[in-house]
Image (cartoon, rainbow, N blue to C red; front, side, top):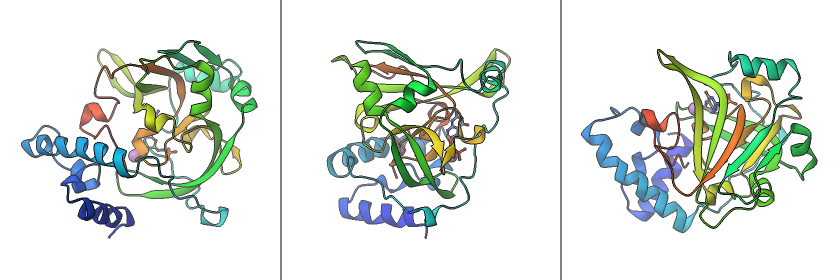
Length: 254
Ligand SMILES: Nc1nc2c(c(=O)[nH]1)N[C@H]1C(S)=C(S)[C@@H](COP(=O)(O)O)O[C@H]1N2
Ligand SMILES: [Mo]
């Protein structure tokens, strides 16, 4: 049995909730709109509520360099074809900016050197994809809490949207760019970083250059790559992300 699943079993056994299926592979194989799915949507909320009470501020395990595995296998979009992204990459990110907007006193527009000038954090953590694989890699970046502190959250701030530059789905009416969201509790967690470095070098394109989110207590799809903007909001305006709109849990806790 995978470690995650057994850990989840222990947790759910302890708490005697039906939260086992929430966020794990079994859940994601259920038909997105079926009755079973609806039944477990309640369990998703329960997991979120329970973890808030007992475990959400705990740190994810950190590893040593000797534990680094697979050099971080890339997944999802690995080489954005978007013209604006290509132009930014061709110019070594000199024209790229991360915008911080919404429910903040001081909207920001930060270059890569701006972010690198802030105090950094390096962490070696395990990445778990909902598809059932995991990797261990070293991430370097700036804590999101520092960036949000600089922007000064307004009292109505509750959630943070992460807007990516890659088109993940092309349709007749245009392309859909990847996006994600987290509540403030995860956004302000000490291991939540905006990473520009991986395994001692710059973040490669396949893993989200120039900047990607790391939220170490959640599943891979919650960590948006190719960031362009952060938007602080009082309430979510949708299901919270690209995969959530397609049936995944909004709270992808592990
Ligand atoms: N912008 C963007 N972010 C993304 C994705 C994506 O396709 N586009 N895929 C997600 C998924 S499902 C996973 S598992 C991780 C993969 O990160 P990696 O490519 O560094 O392994 O990125 C997540 N963030
Ligand atoms: Mo994933």
